[in-house]
Image (tube, rainbow, N blue to C red):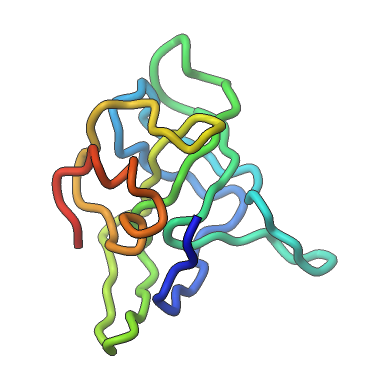
Length: 132
């Protein structure tokens, strides 16, 4: 797993409800933890673009609801600064549900994903239609 080149402000904390941008059966997921986060006492774990979060499915298929899944964040509303100086922000917060190995559960992604996700997660970028 490669590092993200952009200076991404981590705009997603625990309790944030994300749009599930794939066709895995989940419609909305709620972040309950961040994989690999080591923080300070009384500070909410936070995540940004291309980070892995542990989430609970709050809306979706009957089989998917109330399941705990892992997801990769592909869009965030808080702007991120790229090394060339450009700033990118999206209209919503979205994630893609992945397996334990990092492979996407769905077969297609709705909407655009950030370039930083494509460099860190090539299998997720393979099923995406657009990169931003």
